[in-house]
Each structure stands twice: as structure tokens, then as C-alpha cells.
Amino acid sequence: MLLLAFDTATPVITVAVHDGTRIVGEATGEGAMAHGELLAPAIRDAVAQAGATMSDLTDVAVGVGPGPFTGLRVGVVTALTLGSTLGLTTHGVCSLDIVAADVQVEGEFLVATDARRKEVYWARYAADHLRLDGPHVLKPADLSLQHPDLPTYGAGARLYDGVLRAAGDDGHPRAAALAGLVVAGRALELPLEPLYLRRPDAVPQVASKRA
Image 1 (cartoon, rainbow, N blue to C red):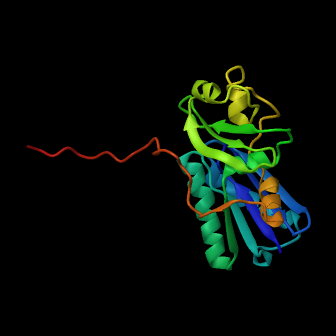
Image 2: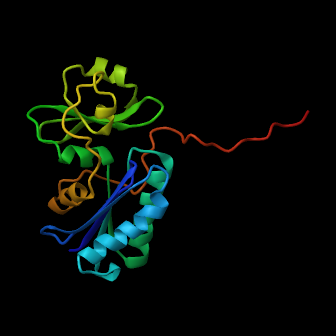
Image 3: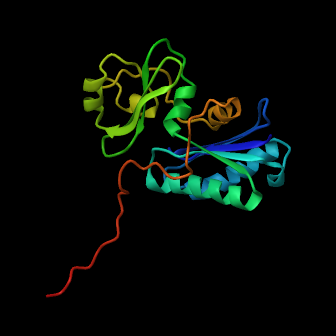
């Protein structure tokens, strides 16, 4: 196996290559509106670091969100294209599950990422990292009312620390964690479709009919 994994659900673009035993290549980039420019070079860098070529890949895994429209579209379309052109086995995983995979805590916990518009994308997890609820989108104060006692991990928790019970570091989805989930067979896999949870900010204008 040679698995290429990446996530574009946040401003941090992360890529990893896993050989079935360990991570053999990694690359990252950051830019809220630069996913299209950053992902392809990061993939090339990670594959080169692994001492491989694109034709050596057997699988591709991608975080399908939730996240902003543009970033998710770039990641999912790239995974679909690579799967089709190279004949790779494809894997889609909720990006909140990827963050949860890095969490070490006893008992239930939340993962929250920045959904903009003063909201967060969130999900609730058991101590064994099984997702119990979500993903959803909600205002931080409303989430705190629903789950006032649960520690919250992820960039959304840090952004609204004081409203949510922020724990851990910034907690962006890591491609290495995504690869680990897939290789271990612990990923709750989803179709390769962007998980938006709500409509994009930009929508086509419809001309009004003349009387």
C-alpha cells in the first residue's frame, strides 16, 4: 500500500504519504483562499519525500469537511481526479473525525472548527473516538448550552475560548492522522462529496422578470 492523504477543510492544507506501516512523506501549506495553488505542490513534495512517484500510489484519502465551499471543492475534486486517472482506491473521511483522532482524553469530548459567520462546525465523540453526534453547525454559545461540561478540541474551540471549554492545541486536521485512520481500518468512510452543511456564501444572482 502507498496511501496519499490530504485535507483542505481549513486554511491549513496538509498532505501525507503512508506506506502501510508509517508516514514516509509530509507537506503543509497555509492560505485561506489559496487551496488550489497550494495543494498540488504540497502533494508533489510529500510524494517526493517518500521517494515515490504518483504512479506508485495505491490509495487516496481526503477530508470531506465540513468546511468552506472553495477549500472542500479543491480537495474532493483532486481526490476524485487522482482516483480516476491513476486507478486509486478512494477514501472520504469527516474532517472533524481527523481532529478527533489526535485527541487524548478520558470520557466524551467535542471537536469544533471555525465555520465563519461566528459559528463552529462541531461533533461529539466517545472516549474511544467514535462519533456520537454531528457534524453540525452552531453558534458557540448555543453549543456551550448544549454541552457545558465537555472539553472541546480544534481551532473553533481556541477561537471561542471562554465560551467553549477549549482543550489541547489549535487542532487542525492532520493528513498523517487521516492516513492512520484509513490504514488501521478505523475510519468511518463517507462518499467523496463535500460536506458543506450550509449553502456557500456566494450564490448566483437571478435577474428579476420584467413586467
